[in-house]
Length: 267
Image (cartoon, rainbow, N blue to C red; front, side, top):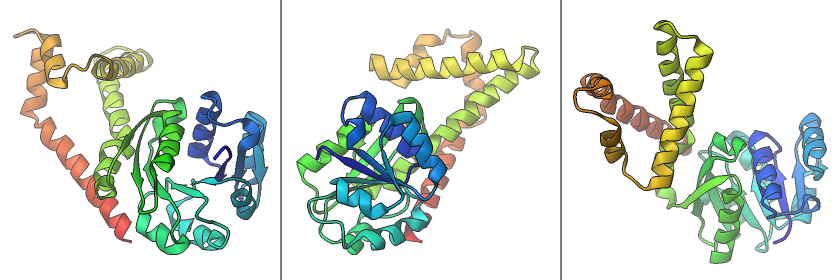
């Protein structure tokens, strides 16, 4: 499986291509991409010196690992276009939100299918992805998917029944973190410090705090205790969060996002 093809050459495909080249997982000449947008293909060609084509069929004919990075509403049409060309020797990876493994398998048959929920920090090599394997997927197929998405961040394996929760907790939540980071910065601006400095303070603090969780294996609860002096500044801020039921607000945010993901999947 030394060649990989991308159906769709947008931002997420570009991030993954960059990751797999930088990691040495695939060589430039072993990557094929198709897209209707000639400008997008030119950018990919200029940036990564890969094989760019306008024909989806040509991608499938040249590569055995096929990553579908198209919009969910066009995925079925693209799969129907390619179903006579996709064989059991292929591995189909899909990052199309809301399109189930069963739906893909119903169109292309008994082919290894892996569904992935990535997120946009993959664009800066700090992505969080979850992979869900189909009925005809073997360990060697799973390893290929894990290696690809490890090249742009971290990966977990999950059952597809949890995909809507994953969408809320990881797929959509970068927007929620951006919102919180920005609101903290705007609060500092209202109190008298310039916004640019406040945004740097807020964003770097969020980044460092996340890194503390990732690198130390200390629980968030204990990290809160570690930084909080009883009766001090942080304690007062913690009290405001509790009094305003921040836990309820965040739970509702994740719950509603999960429900919307479920609705989109049904439709």
